[in-house]
Image (cartoon, rainbow, N blue to C red; front, side, top):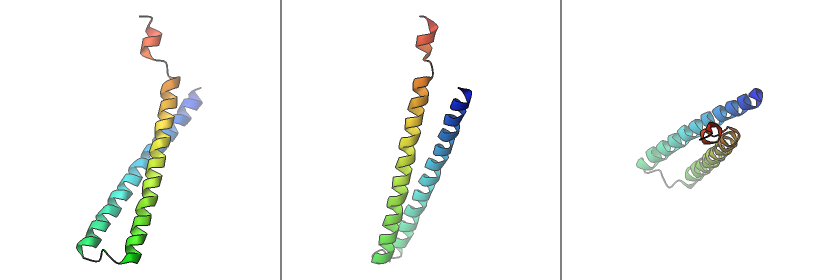
Length: 89
């Protein structure tokens, strides 16, 4: 059982790091987009298309990691005994 809990803990940590990394990557792409538009180069379709596809991929990866992290946390919380159930009050 301890090995099972350690695996969840490790996966939760890994997914948390992935959420942080994807958030930073998305913020970086937004900053790049702002700089790009400020230079009035914003309507070069090829570059804008690539940037939007990149941002879409980051968004999908970010939300997939967030959903998986939430799922693991719910499983862990469901398996841990509630203080109200174990106290006898």
